[in-house]
Image 1 (cartoon, protein in one colour):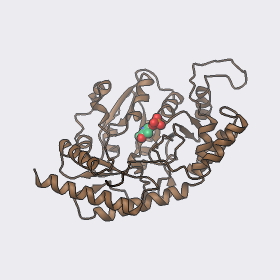
Image 2: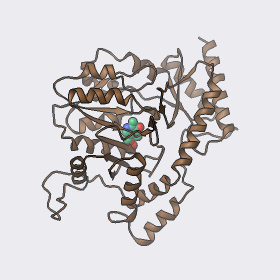
Image 3: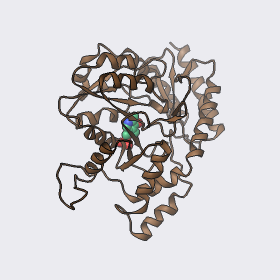
Length: 375
Ligand SMILES: *Cc1c(COP(=O)(O)O)cnc(C)c1O
C-alpha cells in the first residue's frame, strides 16, 4: 500500500512545545499571560496594521468586526457566495441580511461588478474574501466602498502573507479578520484575530471581546458583549508559528510552483492571479475543466482509493437552506455554481515532499484522463 497523503497537516516543529510548556509551568493559561499581547503585536506588525485583537476563532473575528461597525437588523452586508460559510454566517449572527454575489471566473474571487449591482440604500458593508490565498481586487472594492460610503471588511482567513504590490492583505479594509484554525497557514488550533488602524473600531472590538466590561470600571458592563477571548496557550503556539513565517511562505510558494509545472498544458486549471498580486497558497485548488459535479466527485473517490486526500471546493453559500432567501438580489450565480462543481483542493502543507507532490499530480492527471475517456 502506498503512503497516505493528507490534505493538510500543521507544522509544529518550531518553539511551539517550549512556549506551551512555559504556559503550563507558569500557570498562565488565559488573560494576562505574556503570549497574547506578544502574538497580537507581532501579527499587527506583520500585516502592517496598528491594532490587533486575538479572538477564539476566525468566525467570531468577523462577527466582532460587524458589531464594531454597528451592523443592525435590516442592514445588508455583501459577501461572495463562493466561500467558506463563515464569511456569511456572522452576518446572520448580527441579525442582518447577507447579500451574496457571484465570483469572477478567472480569479474565483468576489466579482466587483456583481458587488456594484447588489448595492441598495440598506447596504452597509462588503466582506472581501481572498479565496484559497489569492488576493481579491482590493482597489476595485475600495473604490466601490468609497463611492457608496460602505465599510470594507477583509476575510483574510486563508491568506496570511499574501500581498498586492508588496502591501499585505489584511491592510486594505477598515477591519481585517484572520483565522488560525488547525489547517490554516498559521495555526493556533482554534483562533482568530481582528486588525484595524481605527482607534474607535479597536476600542469597540476590545470592549465586545471581553463581555462588554468598562475598561475603567471593573465588572461594570455598559453594553452586551461576548466572551470571544483566546487563551495564552493558543497564543503561545501562534508566537512560535510567526517565527517561521518566512519558511511557511517560501515552502508554499515552492509547492505551488511545482504543482503549476506538473499541470502546465493539461486541462487542470489553477486560479488566475492578477498582475502584481502575490498569493500564498493555502490549499492548492484546481478546476477540472469541463467536468460536472458527479465526475469531480468520482475523481475525489479515485484519489482516495490511491491513498490521497483531496477536498471539493466550497458549495456556494446561497445553496444552503438558511441563505436561500438571501439570493434574492442576484439573478443567478453561474460562475460560483460552475466553479463549485469542477473544483478540487489538493494536499498543501509545508512538510509535503517533492515526490509526494509528483505522486498527487500524476495520479490526478491519470484519473482525469480516464474519466474524460469514459464519458
Ligand atoms: C477558516 C475560515 C474562516 C474562519 O474560520 P474559523 O474556523 O472560525 O477560524 C472564515 N472565512 C474563511 C474564508 C475561512 O476559510
